[in-house]
Length: 207
Length: 351
Image 1 (cartoon, chains in turn purple, cyan):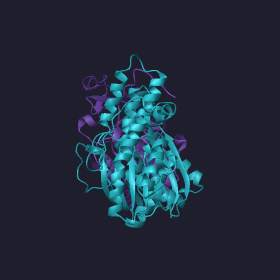
Image 2 (cartoon, rainbow over the protein chains, first blue to last red):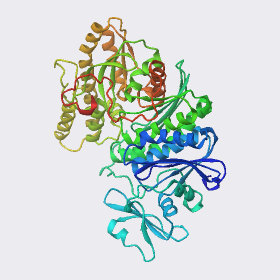
Image 3 (cartoon, rainbow over the protein chains, first blue to last red):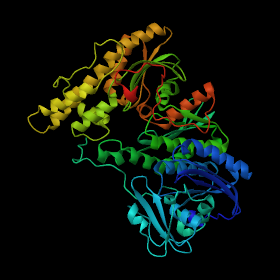
């Protein structure tokens, strides 16, 4: 189970494609050995695997020696999450190691430090929002709300996230969040909305 | 050579393990039909979500069925287009990650080439052959000369044949996917009751058209005195299936003659793609092949609809011919088999 995966020993690959960047890094015994980041809105499907190879090469770690893979699960870019999580699952299978998903707002909270409200642009005119305490623990579930409402944070919480212009949390923030049980998730996307589809008015006739 | 093949370009999450000696060691298909059926067709966002939710289990199941570990795989192939990009990304990225982690080749397979080369996996058909590729997204006749070597003879200028099945079924209130539904209703129907057109039957060239047929189904339904009865549905299904079959065969007959002329050594007419699962069409194509002096080859139905084995096999063939592809390969939502073919009138993405 991901809850029990120990990340402070051995080599851990870290992937983040939930925001406006493609990131791949390697941590060994809890310390960063490689952290690569290329800011981009599109193109992660092409960029991620070569970036990951480069990160492992810089860290001097072989894929077969990975003890775990960490990847952000959003909420975030729909396409980016397909790429990052499919890569993480493929790596987990091929390197025979566990895959740990981590909440993106938590990765931002670990990057920026609390107390804060993490606001992530959905690129659909509203925002993903989650509040964190001074010790980086969530004060509420993540939610979708209009940007103006998101900016009216409760007193004592500063604003953070990609609305400030940063493309993505740091890989150290992602890795730190993955070390906290409350921030771990299954390695599948965190969706805050149902799929955009309307069922048929009349149920179809079957043979 | 043992190749893992991954297919995620439409509504099946599939993985298979195939050897260079044409053995299928595993062929796992997780279909999303039940997830899409309430919407009357494939919903791209639902498909993209579902592929990611199922890919890991499908891959592990394929390896378990094959009785080998990931270490026994020599290369990994994935359908890299054409198709719904949200799903294609999932299969391609998982494949690239496995290839990188194992240090084995990655092969980016054109989904259509997977269908096109399937008769070589199932029946060892020699090049060149004439192919009717007919599915929900495509309808083309092609000369297949080798991996990556295709000459398009005809293509649809509007809907694909499978798309016409789906749309006609939807109009009749039948469930998605329409092909199998219409085929079942047609079994008890009278194919002569409704007079439906055979579009472009006598036009020059080899192109197909199904849009007018769809309109004729709409008009036939509108002319009924009330809601269609079961008998109406059965008769219209049979009439529609007959019209599609005659249209496909009518347009393929001159293509077969052109193929014989261009490739005197060619011996086979092959059908592939999801619509090739239709038994009435298979029977009619067998007759057409015999009349044209060609042997008829139709893969088993399970290998006509989308599957991972066809991707793994195309991976085998491409690896032998060209080697692997780079790990920064960009998936291609549009990817014609014959890139040099002229743009067909109105054909858009389906050419």
